[in-house]
Length: 269
Ligand SMILES: Cc1cc2nc3c(=O)[nH]c(=O)nc-3n(C[C@H](O)[C@H](O)[C@H](O)COP(=O)(O)OP(=O)(O)OC[C@H]3O[C@@H](n4cnc5c(N)ncnc54)[C@H](O)[C@@H]3O)c2cc1C
Image 1: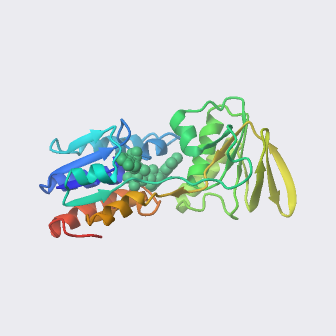
Image 2: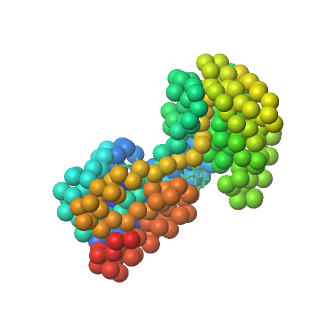
Image 3: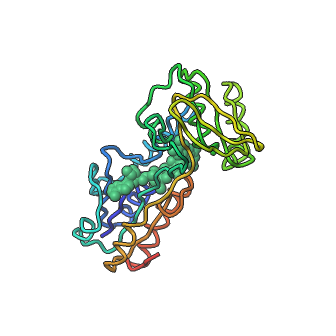
């Protein structure tokens, strides 16, 4: 009997593979909808087809899977199901930006902006972080009527976490939408109306009615530690193991279910 926590791509693949191998699978997802962070990945312009991946993974779930959405897994709740093994596919959440003003109400994460469809029309927007998530969120803002969109990045290169073809495509689209990108800068402070940053030793200020942070993601390891403390075999996959991408989550979901099957549920990662 396998309990899988998280209904993003990793958990969905693990559930489909586990059930098709004859295991009794229970899948716990805290939200009412399946898809995880992949729902956000599908939100920016030109990413609509990511929805196909979600639809395909959901369609691939055999009816034998005991699917429990709207159910937040806890150590006690999982232990009560008496599983032979647990697969944690709980993903990652946005990292916090540690600068003065980051707690102001007009400062939101890219995840929150995309999830809550925050209105950006006619507002000057500053996005902090020019990785894939920051760049795509900036493109979303620029395509949704924001007055001016600027990205601030600490590293020397924007979209440095993308493979070259995606990177070139993304930077071209940002240029077409007149999104300005400053690299090699250090954000000093966010005020109620601006972002102050240091570039080449000079202090600069950009007006901002909305500040969007996209400074990476972090996994929470408390469930893993709690389950291990109870002696349960646990395997952590996808972004919960290390924030990366869709391929890694799906691949590790498949691999974990196969591996547990090979070792009769005794494998502990
Ligand atoms: C804007 C954006 C664009 C992206 N674009 C791409 C891209 O183009 N290509 C790419 O490869 N990747 C992209 N990604 C990253 C990709 O979405 C993630 O790497 C992927 O979704 C990780 O899958 P996962 O299954 O590990 O976790 P998630 O998709 O994060 O799923 C985890 C699930 O676990 C659930 N959960 C958490 N805790 C509990 C609990 N205690 N109980 C029950 N359920 C719980 C969550 O609600 C969630 O549904 C993008 C991400 C964002 C935000």
